[in-house]
Image 1 (tube, rainbow, N blue to C red):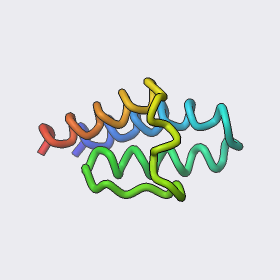
Image 2: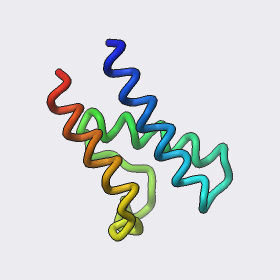
Image 3: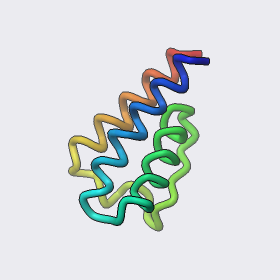
Length: 76
């Protein structure tokens, strides 16, 4: 359980830092937490209107999301 929360927290912090570059911090924090949990559980949920398509060329977000999906898949 500690492993899960630690990895999701790291992902949320990294995503929040990236999202904060283009939106206010409160919104970036919510988006970071939501997408970290969603990616770790490989649920495919997003709260962006058009999904993560706007970030298709963003290496940071793609690496974070991909890493969370892989680690989440191996972590159970």
